[in-house]
Length: 159
Image (cartoon, rainbow, N blue to C red):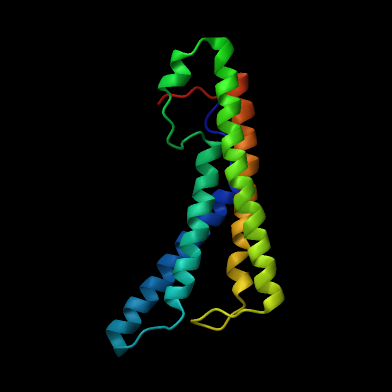
């Protein structure tokens, strides 16, 4: 396999989130310097976009096999047991990400039904929460892709 496996939608989303965080933070600093006041929306949006950036980056790292993993046991095991260990690791990841996706979706749906508003700007809370199940589902898919590539021997752990 040449280069890195791609996770283009997550890369674009992460880059866009970082650009917007930078622009609204810069605008807030300039406004604070010139007027002594600041924009009211910057903190709420920055925290939201930082969460999006974190999940998008984690999805890219999964696809590129760049998450921290202690590979000692994997390298020490005979070849016939290595696949079982990779599947066990994937199963653990699938359970955790599946729970995040399920309960994140449930929380976003409840916030939509209850019409909860954010404390800072009064925007619908589900606008912020809906990204949790979407991006954790993307991570689930990237984990499946990574596991398939590792089992085929296309991704060799260098850790």
